[in-house]
Amino acid sequence: MEEITIDLKDLFQVVMANKKKIAAITAAFMIAGGAYLLVAPPVYQSTSLLRIKQDKGLGDSILSKVSGGNAMDDKQRMMTDAEILKSRNVVLPVIEKTEERDDDGELPDYESYVKKHIVTKPYKDTEILEVDVTGKSPEQAQKANNLIIKGFMNRLTELSHDEQKRTREFLEKRLAASKDELSQAEDKLQQYQAANKMYSTDDQMKQLTDKLNIVDKAKAENQLNLETAQAGLSSVNEQLSSAG
Image (tube, rainbow, N blue to C red):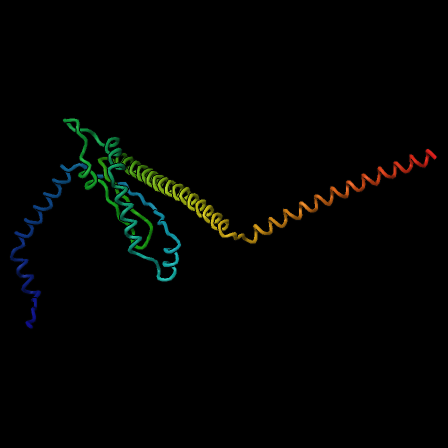
């Protein structure tokens, strides 16, 4: 393997020999940069930080305690939220309210607007999402940023409501089907018990209780009739005694 050595003295001599050329190139680039700054319109940036709470179920919470969580799932969820923030449903109303139409009456294209004006940067190992929005003026950048954040929150609310609605409809259908299945199972069980003369303990206790209630009721009626007859007999005896 050959060793490469650099002699600083020779390098300095080369630089000094070409100092005029180096100075001319440096000056040309400085002039070009200054001219661009004079011609190019100023760009202003507005930055927002969003804390996006990740939905974690029971399995996720147990996994996070045991193995430190699933970083890949969190990253995918953060990327999904970033794409929702840059979706057409969120960005198109912002373009209509903040951008000016050209001579043909057209607004900036959606794809070009997102590439030029919106940047999302999730912070590593956190739930923080940075949103950078640029504009031609500080007011325009701030207004566009606020509208994007507001539209993003509204879009998340709509998606959550739609998901809850579908879940509720599924549960209602499943509940109705479960009730029908349970009713059919009970009917079949009763038919089977009646066909095979099989009764549950609860049914037998109910029948026994009904019979005891009937006996107690008849006993009470007989006791009442007996007391009524005794009272009538006493009254007749008193009338006979008084009659002599």
